[in-house]
Image 1 (cartoon, helix red, strand yellow):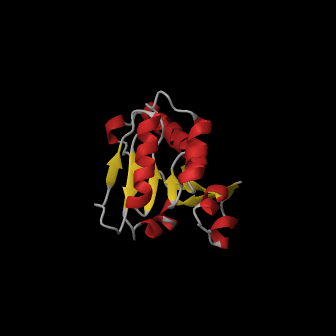
Image 2: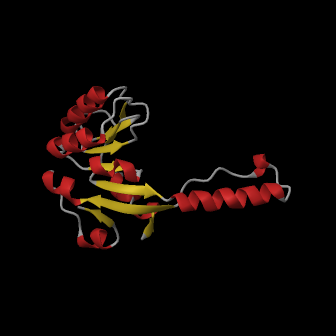
Length: 166
């Protein structure tokens, strides 16, 4: 079931966030500065940043692993399961083995917009007159196994409207 991204945005605004991978983002109300961002060039860099953020921020937002040439999904999953202590989020379904909560982009929304944009151009509209628009829909995903290891319990209403990974 798709949901509006706006419906969840306020809950992410009360703490500092950090981002990891290409990029790694962290957020915290602790002493860490707001809006930390870290890039990782290797699996070792990603692991080091992931560990560091566990004690420095309240929420970790995972980007993607593009550009990490030695990425190993099984190793990263085992590492995340062994070391997750804080809530983490993702925007891509393929990052959910390493995150507790995902607001996943819906490709259909982007495809429909691309099709409508192409039709408008074919009808003579100038591409420069077509605005860039943000995504408005997302699929909520929960990684309950990873969340349980971090002591995170999701509210039942969130679970009811999410795809739950076990």
